[in-house]
Length: 64
Picture 1 (tube, rainbow, N blue to C red):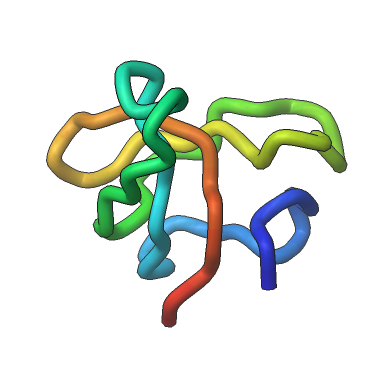
Picture 2: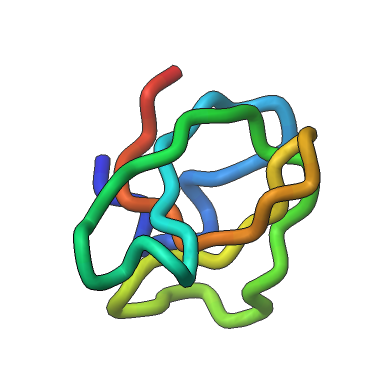
């Protein structure tokens, strides 16, 4: 799954996100979802989430 639909993402899910500073390189950061920040049901670049360690980015792929 690619993380573009909000219904696929929930707190506690393990995901790989792209941080704002890594958008040019596409470097992924793995972590566990704490909060879902995007209110829309779908977002073309990925749903924005906050990880348990506080990092914020858009979901690139769902791992767990």
